Image 1 (cartoon, rainbow, N blue to C red):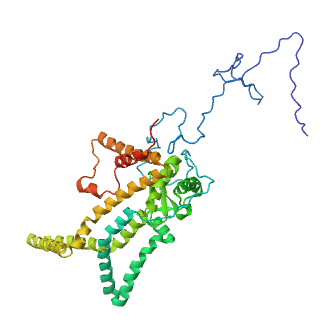
Image 2: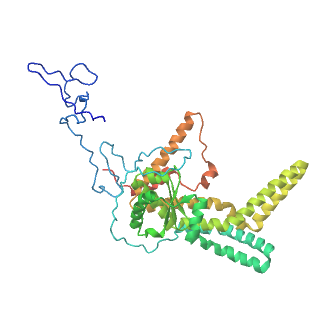
Image 3: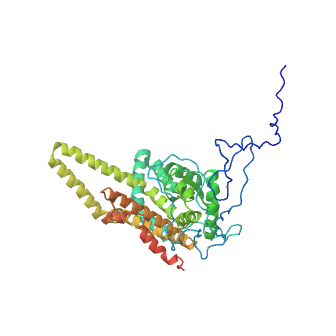
Length: 428
């Protein structure tokens, strides 16, 4: 049976013999000691795992971040080494991708710079959790002609298909269907199917809910009145859907500071409190049958003209004249319906622009004027960058002009910034 090896003893030192020099790995000469500030690594002795001696050296001071609230309402915190932005200056967000990327859940990297002034305090409750301002009423009034056309279309089709008694029951059911705008399960289904929104993940909810509760507390709104949802998108955006849903993109949730996220949410809350979201959806729903009938009529007219052009140019001309005469007759006989139908898209776009300005004012009233302007500066910087990129490639971005500008539902960024300027704090 073999025995285990015994311990290794050092070689004996004889009197008068000089001790051998220390051998360092990979060198033939002793290595000088390591002094503070030198870049040479400390010596490593064979067979030992002890850490090399540490020498005193200066420890860099950690940056001191502000813990006090901002000097004035709406101010953003200033960090060491950063240039002080003027009121409303656009923050530098991460670049947004123009190509859709696969969704990957991620932890928010945006700074939490929001002033949670209502945290732990009892909030006041506003008299109205939802309402209808002049913009919402205007949207509904503009849709009245379209609603009358839709009512006639639904009644004609229902009576023709089911008879008088059942047909009018179908009409009543269609009229009552507008209440689904305020039915939360139907709203959630609509938001998921149409706007591709989803329920937030737990990490997203932990990021989103404190900001949302601060916004609603400032407005006197109970946070549970509305449903928070998330859209997988690399765009800075949010949406007010139907009567109870507030959607926000993953970019807005994870990449922008909490104060800017609060401003975006306050803007969408303004749409809900003003009734813009439910009024727009209600008007759209009740005008849908009329728009479908009009689209079918135009399609049939194009088919008829195309078929007539196969036989002769004269037949095409006669058919076109007949259709033109029919349209003119409609204007003369039922002008109170046809004229509002023609100008309705322009009035609705104008109401949409007013709604955006009112929602901006709502965000400013809650103390987010500076942050809202920062978001708008970011939008403007993106537009300018897109124009510069197109110009560098010898192209020019197509912009709406003439009547097309009257059909835009959002004011331009400069108009919105100018409207918010009276709410900005004065520079010091």
